[in-house]
Image (cartoon, rainbow, N blue to C red):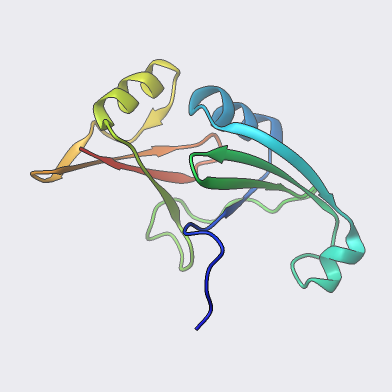
Length: 141
């Protein structure tokens, strides 16, 4: 059995506007930029991930690395919503106090889809959108 070196996955998010996405995740959600890595065309092709060069901006949030992946000519986003198409559709962030996160991020202009909704006696949820329409689920007490 494969043994993981870390207990969490890194998340790669393709964005059309790197500066807009960086501003959202850094300035509004409080993620910390750690490094930016250019990937040349040969490496992108050999790795089977793309036919063109691209940049990766890493942001850290707790144990998670969010990788903003920027292609010079990124295609438009697919249909919005979790049922818009198959595949990865949103990321989930667990917080210790959902109301505090909702209040803080809402004051910074985050686009929430609703107020926090109680799913169980111990758990609430709320979804937000980043500037490109990507969904982020927030879960917590």
